[in-house]
Length: 371
Ligand code: THG
Image (cartoon, rainbow, N blue to C red):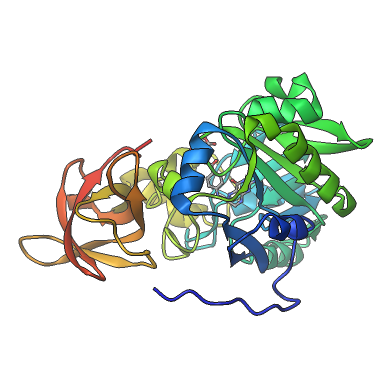
Protein backbone atom coordinates (compact mmCIF):
# COMPACT_ATOMS: atom_id res chain seq x y z
CA UNK A 1 0.00 0.00 0.00
CA UNK A 2 1.24 3.51 -0.83
CA UNK A 3 2.82 5.64 1.86
CA UNK A 4 2.89 9.37 1.45
CA UNK A 5 4.16 12.62 2.88
CA UNK A 6 2.08 14.76 5.20
CA UNK A 7 1.93 18.44 4.25
CA UNK A 8 2.62 20.78 7.12
CA UNK A 9 -0.17 23.14 8.12
CA UNK A 10 -1.11 25.09 11.21
CA UNK A 11 -4.33 23.08 11.54
CA UNK A 12 -2.21 19.92 11.99
CA UNK A 13 -0.92 20.91 15.38
CA UNK A 14 2.47 19.94 16.76
CA UNK A 15 3.02 19.02 20.39
CA UNK A 16 5.74 20.44 22.64
CA UNK A 17 7.43 17.02 22.30
CA UNK A 18 7.45 17.04 18.47
CA UNK A 19 10.99 18.41 18.15
CA UNK A 20 12.33 15.64 20.40
CA UNK A 21 10.26 13.01 18.57
CA UNK A 22 11.77 14.16 15.28
CA UNK A 23 15.30 14.28 16.69
CA UNK A 24 14.71 10.67 17.80
CA UNK A 25 13.97 9.72 14.19
CA UNK A 26 10.19 9.39 13.85
CA UNK A 27 9.48 7.78 10.45
CA UNK A 28 5.73 8.20 10.15
CA UNK A 29 2.97 10.29 11.66
CA UNK A 30 -0.76 10.10 11.61
CA UNK A 31 -3.18 12.87 12.56
CA UNK A 32 -5.36 12.52 15.67
CA UNK A 33 -7.56 15.29 17.03
CA UNK A 34 -5.96 17.61 14.44
CA UNK A 35 -2.56 16.95 16.03
CA UNK A 36 0.51 14.89 15.13
CA UNK A 37 0.62 11.33 16.49
CA UNK A 38 3.90 9.45 15.97
CA UNK A 39 3.23 6.15 14.19
CA UNK A 40 6.63 4.49 13.79
CA UNK A 41 10.28 4.89 14.79
CA UNK A 42 11.70 1.53 13.61
CA UNK A 43 9.23 -1.22 12.69
CA UNK A 44 5.97 -2.27 14.34
CA UNK A 45 7.46 -5.69 15.20
CA UNK A 46 10.65 -4.29 16.70
CA UNK A 47 8.72 -1.75 18.76
CA UNK A 48 6.25 -4.48 19.84
CA UNK A 49 9.03 -6.68 21.20
CA UNK A 50 10.64 -3.72 22.95
CA UNK A 51 7.32 -2.53 24.46
CA UNK A 52 6.67 -5.99 25.90
CA UNK A 53 10.08 -6.28 27.55
CA UNK A 54 11.35 -2.78 28.35
CA UNK A 55 9.86 0.71 28.57
CA UNK A 56 8.86 3.37 26.05
CA UNK A 57 8.03 7.08 26.16
CA UNK A 58 5.11 8.05 23.90
CA UNK A 59 4.14 11.53 22.73
CA UNK A 60 0.36 11.18 23.01
CA UNK A 61 -0.19 14.92 23.25
CA UNK A 62 -2.96 14.33 20.68
CA UNK A 63 -5.08 12.82 23.46
CA UNK A 64 -6.59 16.26 23.94
CA UNK A 65 -8.29 17.25 27.16
CA UNK A 66 -11.72 18.83 27.30
CA UNK A 67 -11.84 20.65 30.62
CA UNK A 68 -15.27 21.01 32.22
CA UNK A 69 -15.24 23.28 35.21
CA UNK A 70 -17.95 24.85 37.35
CA UNK A 71 -21.01 24.19 39.49
CA UNK A 72 -22.71 22.01 36.83
CA UNK A 73 -19.59 20.07 35.80
CA UNK A 74 -20.73 16.72 37.23
CA UNK A 75 -24.19 17.15 35.72
CA UNK A 76 -22.72 17.85 32.28
CA UNK A 77 -20.38 14.85 32.51
CA UNK A 78 -23.33 12.58 33.32
CA UNK A 79 -25.21 13.91 30.28
CA UNK A 80 -22.38 12.59 28.12
CA UNK A 81 -22.08 8.99 29.29
CA UNK A 82 -24.22 5.98 30.26
CA UNK A 83 -21.57 5.13 32.88
CA UNK A 84 -22.82 6.16 36.33
CA UNK A 85 -20.22 8.69 37.46
CA UNK A 86 -21.54 9.16 41.00
CA UNK A 87 -19.02 6.69 42.49
CA UNK A 88 -16.10 8.44 40.76
CA UNK A 89 -13.96 10.31 43.30
CA UNK A 90 -11.48 13.12 42.76
CA UNK A 91 -8.15 11.43 42.05
CA UNK A 92 -9.77 8.72 39.93
CA UNK A 93 -10.05 8.14 36.19
CA UNK A 94 -12.73 6.19 34.34
CA UNK A 95 -13.03 4.77 30.84
CA UNK A 96 -16.27 6.37 29.67
CA UNK A 97 -18.20 5.59 26.47
CA UNK A 98 -19.81 8.86 25.36
CA UNK A 99 -22.96 8.79 23.24
CA UNK A 100 -25.38 11.03 21.35
CA UNK A 101 -29.18 11.05 21.71
CA UNK A 102 -29.45 7.88 19.59
CA UNK A 103 -27.00 6.00 21.81
CA UNK A 104 -24.34 6.17 19.08
CA UNK A 105 -20.71 6.34 20.19
CA UNK A 106 -19.25 9.86 19.93
CA UNK A 107 -15.96 9.03 21.66
CA UNK A 108 -14.45 6.64 24.22
CA UNK A 109 -12.37 8.91 26.44
CA UNK A 110 -10.75 8.52 29.81
CA UNK A 111 -12.50 10.86 32.26
CA UNK A 112 -10.13 12.34 34.84
CA UNK A 113 -11.84 13.75 37.94
CA UNK A 114 -9.58 16.53 39.20
CA UNK A 115 -12.03 17.93 41.76
CA UNK A 116 -15.76 17.80 42.49
CA UNK A 117 -16.31 20.64 40.03
CA UNK A 118 -13.47 20.01 37.58
CA UNK A 119 -12.89 17.23 35.02
CA UNK A 120 -10.63 16.48 32.09
CA UNK A 121 -12.12 14.39 29.31
CA UNK A 122 -9.11 12.77 27.62
CA UNK A 123 -10.55 12.20 24.19
CA UNK A 124 -10.05 9.79 21.30
CA UNK A 125 -10.14 11.06 17.73
CA UNK A 126 -13.41 12.98 17.31
CA UNK A 127 -14.43 16.62 17.80
CA UNK A 128 -16.22 16.00 21.09
CA UNK A 129 -15.55 19.58 22.26
CA UNK A 130 -18.28 20.91 19.96
CA UNK A 131 -20.92 18.56 21.38
CA UNK A 132 -19.92 19.31 24.99
CA UNK A 133 -19.97 23.08 24.39
CA UNK A 134 -23.35 22.84 22.64
CA UNK A 135 -24.89 20.90 25.55
CA UNK A 136 -23.49 23.42 28.05
CA UNK A 137 -24.95 26.31 26.04
CA UNK A 138 -28.26 24.65 25.16
CA UNK A 139 -28.99 23.64 28.76
CA UNK A 140 -27.64 26.95 30.16
CA UNK A 141 -25.23 25.10 32.43
CA UNK A 142 -22.94 26.90 34.82
CA UNK A 143 -19.69 25.52 33.39
CA UNK A 144 -16.66 26.55 31.39
CA UNK A 145 -15.79 24.11 28.61
CA UNK A 146 -12.29 24.57 27.19
CA UNK A 147 -9.45 22.71 25.50
CA UNK A 148 -6.53 23.59 27.77
CA UNK A 149 -2.83 23.30 26.91
CA UNK A 150 -2.34 19.78 28.27
CA UNK A 151 -0.34 17.13 26.44
CA UNK A 152 -0.20 13.61 27.89
CA UNK A 153 3.12 11.78 27.73
CA UNK A 154 2.77 8.02 28.21
CA UNK A 155 5.42 5.79 29.76
CA UNK A 156 4.51 2.17 28.92
CA UNK A 157 6.10 -1.22 29.41
CA UNK A 158 7.17 -3.56 32.24
CA UNK A 159 9.96 -1.22 33.34
CA UNK A 160 7.68 1.83 33.57
CA UNK A 161 7.53 1.79 37.38
CA UNK A 162 11.32 1.73 37.60
CA UNK A 163 11.69 4.58 35.14
CA UNK A 164 8.96 6.90 36.42
CA UNK A 165 10.00 6.39 40.06
CA UNK A 166 13.52 7.56 39.19
CA UNK A 167 12.14 10.87 37.92
CA UNK A 168 9.17 11.40 40.27
CA UNK A 169 10.07 9.36 43.38
CA UNK A 170 9.00 6.06 44.88
CA UNK A 171 5.44 7.34 45.49
CA UNK A 172 4.54 6.53 41.88
CA UNK A 173 4.63 2.82 42.75
CA UNK A 174 1.65 3.38 45.06
CA UNK A 175 -0.55 4.85 42.33
CA UNK A 176 -3.35 2.34 41.66
CA UNK A 177 -4.77 1.53 38.21
CA UNK A 178 -6.81 4.45 36.86
CA UNK A 179 -5.88 6.71 39.79
CA UNK A 180 -3.57 9.69 39.75
CA UNK A 181 -1.26 11.60 42.06
CA UNK A 182 0.04 15.14 41.65
CA UNK A 183 3.84 15.01 41.79
CA UNK A 184 6.35 17.82 41.32
CA UNK A 185 8.70 18.20 38.39
CA UNK A 186 10.92 21.32 38.31
CA UNK A 187 8.76 22.75 41.11
CA UNK A 188 5.48 22.24 39.23
CA UNK A 189 2.88 19.59 40.12
CA UNK A 190 1.93 17.26 37.28
CA UNK A 191 -1.00 14.84 37.16
CA UNK A 192 0.43 11.31 36.85
CA UNK A 193 -2.03 8.46 36.34
CA UNK A 194 -1.52 4.73 36.10
CA UNK A 195 -3.13 4.24 32.70
CA UNK A 196 -2.27 4.14 29.03
CA UNK A 197 -3.10 2.65 25.66
CA UNK A 198 -1.28 -0.65 26.11
CA UNK A 199 -1.72 -3.79 28.19
CA UNK A 200 1.92 -3.65 29.39
CA UNK A 201 1.27 -1.30 32.31
CA UNK A 202 2.58 2.18 32.87
CA UNK A 203 1.71 5.80 33.42
CA UNK A 204 0.41 8.89 31.70
CA UNK A 205 1.91 12.23 32.67
CA UNK A 206 -0.47 15.10 31.86
CA UNK A 207 1.95 17.90 30.99
CA UNK A 208 0.28 21.29 31.38
CA UNK A 209 3.35 23.49 30.89
CA UNK A 210 4.82 23.45 27.41
CA UNK A 211 8.21 24.70 28.58
CA UNK A 212 8.63 21.58 30.73
CA UNK A 213 8.13 19.22 27.77
CA UNK A 214 11.76 18.89 26.70
CA UNK A 215 13.15 18.79 30.26
CA UNK A 216 10.64 16.00 31.03
CA UNK A 217 11.44 14.05 27.85
CA UNK A 218 15.17 14.41 28.49
CA UNK A 219 14.87 13.42 32.16
CA UNK A 220 13.04 10.19 31.25
CA UNK A 221 15.48 9.32 28.46
CA UNK A 222 18.46 10.04 30.71
CA UNK A 223 17.13 8.14 33.74
CA UNK A 224 16.16 5.15 31.61
CA UNK A 225 19.38 4.58 29.70
CA UNK A 226 20.24 1.34 31.52
CA UNK A 227 16.58 0.25 31.21
CA UNK A 228 16.96 0.65 27.44
CA UNK A 229 14.19 3.23 27.28
CA UNK A 230 13.18 4.28 23.76
CA UNK A 231 10.70 6.64 22.19
CA UNK A 232 7.63 4.78 20.98
CA UNK A 233 3.98 5.10 20.13
CA UNK A 234 0.77 3.10 20.50
CA UNK A 235 1.61 -0.26 18.91
CA UNK A 236 -0.86 -1.75 16.42
CA UNK A 237 0.05 -5.38 17.15
CA UNK A 238 -0.03 -5.05 20.93
CA UNK A 239 -3.32 -3.14 20.94
CA UNK A 240 -5.08 -5.64 18.67
CA UNK A 241 -3.86 -8.56 20.82
CA UNK A 242 -5.22 -6.76 23.90
CA UNK A 243 -8.37 -5.65 22.04
CA UNK A 244 -7.96 -1.99 22.85
CA UNK A 245 -10.49 -0.25 20.60
CA UNK A 246 -9.70 2.61 18.26
CA UNK A 247 -12.49 5.14 17.74
CA UNK A 248 -13.08 5.84 14.05
CA UNK A 249 -11.53 2.48 13.15
CA UNK A 250 -13.24 -0.20 15.23
CA UNK A 251 -16.34 1.81 16.10
CA UNK A 252 -18.15 4.93 14.94
CA UNK A 253 -21.36 6.84 15.67
CA UNK A 254 -23.18 3.88 14.03
CA UNK A 255 -22.40 1.72 17.09
CA UNK A 256 -23.78 1.56 20.61
CA UNK A 257 -21.39 0.99 23.52
CA UNK A 258 -22.91 -2.49 23.89
CA UNK A 259 -22.01 -3.38 20.31
CA UNK A 260 -18.48 -2.23 21.14
CA UNK A 261 -18.28 -4.64 24.06
CA UNK A 262 -18.30 -1.65 26.41
CA UNK A 263 -21.47 -2.69 28.22
CA UNK A 264 -19.38 -3.31 31.33
CA UNK A 265 -18.63 0.43 31.43
CA UNK A 266 -22.35 1.33 31.23
CA UNK A 267 -24.94 1.62 33.99
CA UNK A 268 -27.76 2.71 31.76
CA UNK A 269 -30.49 2.24 34.40
CA UNK A 270 -28.86 4.51 36.98
CA UNK A 271 -27.11 6.98 34.65
CA UNK A 272 -29.91 9.49 35.07
CA UNK A 273 -29.39 12.52 32.86
CA UNK A 274 -27.41 10.77 30.12
CA UNK A 275 -28.68 12.17 26.82
CA UNK A 276 -28.60 8.73 25.18
CA UNK A 277 -30.19 6.88 28.10
CA UNK A 278 -33.67 6.29 26.60
CA UNK A 279 -32.17 5.09 23.33
CA UNK A 280 -29.84 2.68 25.17
CA UNK A 281 -32.32 1.24 27.70
CA UNK A 282 -33.59 -1.45 25.29
CA UNK A 283 -30.16 -2.58 24.11
CA UNK A 284 -28.95 -2.52 27.74
CA UNK A 285 -31.77 -4.95 28.65
CA UNK A 286 -31.89 -7.17 25.53
CA UNK A 287 -28.26 -6.99 24.50
CA UNK A 288 -26.89 -5.95 21.09
CA UNK A 289 -27.46 -7.71 17.73
CA UNK A 290 -23.79 -7.49 16.75
CA UNK A 291 -20.67 -7.16 18.86
CA UNK A 292 -16.93 -6.52 18.80
CA UNK A 293 -14.89 -9.70 18.70
CA UNK A 294 -11.25 -10.68 18.41
CA UNK A 295 -10.53 -12.87 15.40
CA UNK A 296 -7.61 -15.01 14.26
CA UNK A 297 -7.12 -14.78 10.50
CA UNK A 298 -5.44 -17.80 8.94
CA UNK A 299 -2.64 -17.74 6.40
CA UNK A 300 0.30 -15.51 5.60
CA UNK A 301 0.66 -12.02 7.15
CA UNK A 302 -2.25 -9.83 6.02
CA UNK A 303 -1.63 -6.58 4.12
CA UNK A 304 -2.03 -3.28 6.01
CA UNK A 305 -5.65 -3.08 7.10
CA UNK A 306 -7.66 -0.01 6.28
CA UNK A 307 -10.99 -1.71 6.81
CA UNK A 308 -13.68 -2.62 6.72
CA UNK A 309 -13.00 -6.09 5.29
CA UNK A 310 -16.30 -8.01 4.92
CA UNK A 311 -16.97 -11.26 6.82
CA UNK A 312 -19.32 -13.83 5.27
CA UNK A 313 -21.25 -16.92 6.34
CA UNK A 314 -19.24 -19.62 4.52
CA UNK A 315 -22.40 -21.55 3.59
CA UNK A 316 -24.86 -18.88 2.52
CA UNK A 317 -22.33 -16.19 1.55
CA UNK A 318 -24.38 -13.68 3.53
CA UNK A 319 -22.46 -10.74 5.02
CA UNK A 320 -22.35 -11.22 8.80
CA UNK A 321 -19.70 -8.78 9.97
CA UNK A 322 -16.51 -6.92 9.20
CA UNK A 323 -12.88 -6.70 10.26
CA UNK A 324 -11.61 -3.20 11.07
CA UNK A 325 -8.10 -3.84 12.47
CA UNK A 326 -5.75 -6.70 11.55
CA UNK A 327 -2.02 -7.41 11.67
CA UNK A 328 0.44 -10.30 11.96
CA UNK A 329 1.30 -11.21 15.56
CA UNK A 330 4.79 -12.64 16.09
CA UNK A 331 3.85 -14.00 19.55
CA UNK A 332 0.61 -15.72 18.50
CA UNK A 333 1.99 -16.77 15.09
CA UNK A 334 -1.24 -15.82 13.37
CA UNK A 335 -2.94 -12.68 12.13
CA UNK A 336 -4.81 -11.07 15.01
CA UNK A 337 -7.82 -8.88 14.31
CA UNK A 338 -10.71 -6.88 15.73
CA UNK A 339 -14.10 -6.89 14.05
CA UNK A 340 -17.84 -6.59 14.53
CA UNK A 341 -19.81 -9.84 14.16
CA UNK A 342 -23.57 -10.52 14.03
CA UNK A 343 -25.25 -12.29 16.97
CA UNK A 344 -25.63 -15.74 15.37
CA UNK A 345 -21.93 -15.83 14.46
CA UNK A 346 -20.12 -14.35 17.46
CA UNK A 347 -19.61 -17.50 19.53
CA UNK A 348 -16.11 -18.76 20.25
CA UNK A 349 -14.67 -20.83 17.40
CA UNK A 350 -17.13 -19.78 14.66
CA UNK A 351 -15.37 -19.97 11.28
CA UNK A 352 -16.14 -17.14 8.88
CA UNK A 353 -15.01 -16.32 5.38
CA UNK A 354 -13.03 -13.08 5.28
CA UNK A 355 -12.83 -11.04 2.08
CA UNK A 356 -9.26 -9.68 2.43
CA UNK A 357 -7.86 -7.43 -0.32
CA UNK A 358 -5.51 -10.21 -1.44
CA UNK A 359 -8.20 -12.90 -1.51
CA UNK A 360 -10.49 -14.95 0.74
CA UNK A 361 -9.27 -16.33 4.08
CA UNK A 362 -10.63 -18.12 7.12
CA UNK A 363 -11.27 -16.04 10.22
CA UNK A 364 -11.93 -17.70 13.58
CA UNK A 365 -13.99 -15.84 16.17
CA UNK A 366 -12.59 -15.54 19.70
CA UNK A 367 -14.66 -14.35 22.63
CA UNK A 368 -11.66 -13.22 24.69
CA UNK A 369 -8.81 -10.93 23.60
CA UNK A 370 -5.54 -12.65 22.68
CA UNK A 371 -3.73 -11.11 25.64
N1 THG B 1 -5.28 7.48 27.72
C1 THG B 1 -5.75 8.74 27.82
N2 THG B 1 -6.55 9.27 26.88
C2 THG B 1 -6.87 8.54 25.80
C3 THG B 1 -6.42 7.21 25.67
C4 THG B 1 -5.59 6.69 26.66
N3 THG B 1 -7.66 9.08 24.85
C5 THG B 1 -7.77 8.41 23.58
C6 THG B 1 -7.89 6.91 23.72
N4 THG B 1 -6.80 6.43 24.58
C7 THG B 1 -9.23 6.54 24.31
N5 THG B 1 -9.48 5.11 24.24
C8 THG B 1 -9.15 4.25 25.27
C9 THG B 1 -9.32 2.89 25.04
C10 THG B 1 -9.00 1.98 26.04
C11 THG B 1 -8.51 2.43 27.24
C12 THG B 1 -8.33 3.77 27.47
C13 THG B 1 -8.67 4.69 26.48
C14 THG B 1 -8.16 1.49 28.34
N6 THG B 1 -8.84 0.36 28.44
C15 THG B 1 -8.48 -0.69 29.35
C16 THG B 1 -8.98 -2.00 28.78
O1 THG B 1 -9.90 -1.96 27.96
O2 THG B 1 -8.43 -3.02 29.12
C17 THG B 1 -8.95 -0.51 30.79
C18 THG B 1 -10.27 0.05 31.03
C19 THG B 1 -10.71 -0.12 32.49
O3 THG B 1 -10.62 -1.24 33.01
O4 THG B 1 -11.19 0.86 33.12
O5 THG B 1 -7.28 1.75 29.13
O6 THG B 1 -5.12 5.52 26.61
N7 THG B 1 -5.43 9.50 28.87
